Image 1: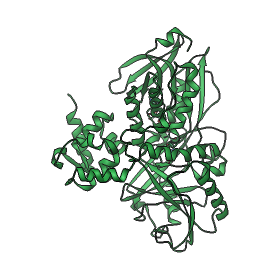
Image 2: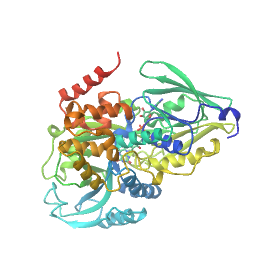
Image 3: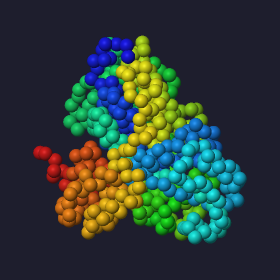
Image 4: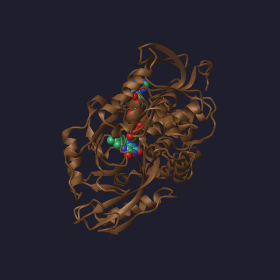
Length: 504
Ligand SMILES: Cc1cc2nc3c(=O)[nH]c(=O)nc-3n(C[C@H](O)[C@H](O)[C@H](O)COP(=O)(O)OP(=O)(O)OC[C@H]3O[C@@H](n4cnc5c(N)ncnc54)[C@H](O)[C@@H]3O)c2cc1C
């Protein structure tokens, strides 16, 4: 850092965006001793990071596009994230049913051999072929499918991963402000003057920062429009992806990866105990606002793709929930949205070697921790001296439970007499922080009002106090997925409770 004004800025780093990437950068930077402010215009994980397929995966299909760097990094991150947050990242077996109309078996086996060996695999089992019918892996599939290939990846609660990462950033000293929009910035004496708006009441203030990270996801270009920068031609390509949720298509723990006739793949993933999550689609859109809901066409596409394989066909009447998100991909000029790179690209702009703004394009939830390290490598010449890389070995809040199943049993023992599903939900969400959430109580009534689906007044208060939750949606669909298991009246009761506890 070469300027006196940069040293006197309010913050070393301003991070715009409270998705997984913004939270990851804020966490890493704060842990290295930087003074960090992260702003999110809505709620944490309210955009792409809450609407993903919820997989921590190498991305088998990316091998077809020769994305070896991305796949290797992503494969290695599976074990890193499993260790960091075993309560929200769980190993999962995937079955790829096979018939003669699909990619040949030798090609899939070769891809999976690379998948097994490209990245370090410690706890996850490797891949193998199985003949059908199989006691486990042909469950729910049509009897005419004669074989399948089984491999490993992980699933994650994407919104909780984002929130836990922001909590870790805060624990390391970062300030995290939700419902705070970056409206624009300018460089003055080698530092950024950034204007922020409190979205709750419209009030504005200016902060100064040595460097800015633009982690605006689908809004990366609109954030850039609000700051002076040299145009580089880097563009974001918005590709919508939608999911449907249906009653579970089989009762076992594995997911299916279905090859569709258009050469795309569709996942069928066990979800929230009672359901299967089916997705996703690839639909180019011009603005994030165009991609709020799934279309009937997308719903039918997913149903048709699943029904090619399912013994008991599903229909629109089975769909209990849907969601849609937008991938903020780096525009590499490819016309087929499925083939656009999923790797991340970092674009840096500065003025006379000062006041950099670094914009993030693309990326995966799986690689958010590595992305943060790359961002700090790139910004290091502009920033005060930093500590070494640290996140690879560190737990996320609640993740310090190396043996998750043993820990859960310990909680069942400690809170004996509490409803099992309530405890199970709390342990899954909070891991090692469960005793902080439930407290030193002996009877379930001490948790206060039970809103249904295992959500109690006590947990709501914790989510508000510790996790930036403000609205019913923050609680029902992001901090938890209790909304899926509740009826409309129960969801309304949560909204009413939050309204009633707000100061007048
Ligand atoms: C359908 C789908 C399925 C996917 N499945 C997977 C998967 O299974 N596994 C995987 O690894 N990846 C998956 N991905 C990719 C992954 O979800 C994204 O790469 C990742 O979530 C992007 O995170 P982000 O932080 O960059 O963006 P976002 O999560 O979109 O965060 C950007 C944030 O910036 C905020 N923001 C924007 N402008 C401003 C401003 N002016 N001021 C303040 N805040 C602002 C927004 O409100 C938003 O919250 C999937 C993506 C999609 C769409």
